Image 1 (cartoon, protein in one colour):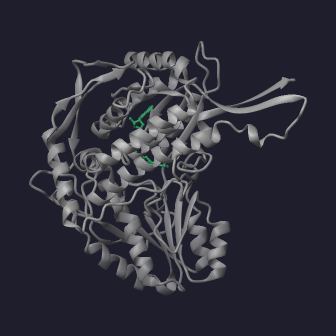
Image 2 (tube, rainbow, N blue to C red):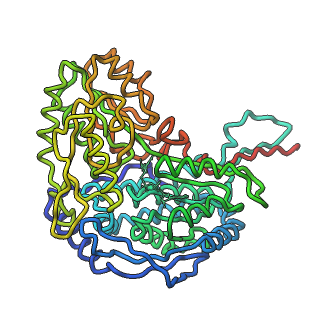
Length: 519
Ligand code: NAD
């Protein structure tokens, strides 16, 4: 019997033995940097002559690994391999498919710090953030394994009809294109792949260009459990080449994407076009961006509110879709809360996260992100008052470090307060009163996460009804959703309204077949 789902505990880095174990994992990861990896299609490793690097954003000259610059033809072959594997994988009993996930969870738990260490080096995650990412990955495996066993046969939900024997089976869709971002490089791809394959689908997984190393490591872990060839195919290359072909291929049945609004909209549109030879309507499961707000009213515990704002805005350098990149504070307490937020943000340590657990903020992901964020800062100075940060940090290794940057008195409709920047920038707007704050919160095209700090029962109830976000948090930060506890996913331009880690998530990867046999 499978025990009840329990979320994976986070590592306590105040304990010296945990610090030593994590340092040992970092040393192991460092001993592996600079290798060249293949594509894996139908279980066969294929090296290409043309490879491109994935780098450490703390020290951009350090290449963590080289990966094949795959082409559209490689994507075709991977989709075709997945189609062949689907013929048998779909009939493997669900309990057996679920066991692969449970074994993967156990294997990752044994090598937990190692998986986190790859992320510290490849994506600049702090130890705490990397540890949480690995824990979430384990949680997805454990949670979806249990959900699959529960959800895939729903016959017992039918009304009995004695003349017939009835069945209601949630059967798989077919071949999926799994296209994740780099910012949760373990948990997001593992969650998407696990959901797809436990439901009986086969996939082509293309990691983001900035996180191919950890993408390789998690796929290798799945293969090491004896997963049949072709169930999970691994391909790298530019998103607009290989990713786009995976979306357009007529044998692709669904696309599981997490990333920016721009790419998500392109996929939504192009997946809807029927390709020659295509026999179905493709399904798009899209998780996109956010411009998430933390609201504070005059009844709130102001210290907790300030701490919540800082944690929501600057965890993983603000590079979370759930990041509280806007704070909306009512006039009466605006100065007090803003002052405290600036003080707290000043204390955050910025540096290369492999230095130790004391580093709270690492680098932003790459040079392109650095430029985009610096451009947004420049534009922001026209609209708001720069209260903290604003200039990149100079480091000997030319890492992509931007310190916590805060703008105050930003008009609610300025670009800084409406558009996703995806970096360590907090925009603070003033609201006349609670009603005004709520209106401002709902004013963007997104609807992912949001938080309200208040001690008014009436306002907390109103926020429950009127704050239009997929994940609403009351009197706590707006990041850090836990699998099975805070099912995650947003409204409006934040996605297609699915909830990862939620009780019905796997249904997105299935279609229901109703069977009746006259007795
Ligand atoms: P991105 O959209 O640039 O890339 C995401 C993936 O799409 C990558 O694998 C990329 O290679 C691929 N891609 C790019 N062009 C493509 C194309 N034309 N066709 C197919 N695939 C293509 O996003 P990113 O920079 O990797 O990630 C950051 C974004 O992800 C932010 O907007 C963030 O809010 C969002 N995000 C959302 C969630 C959520 O759950 N809603 C979670 C994490 C990140």
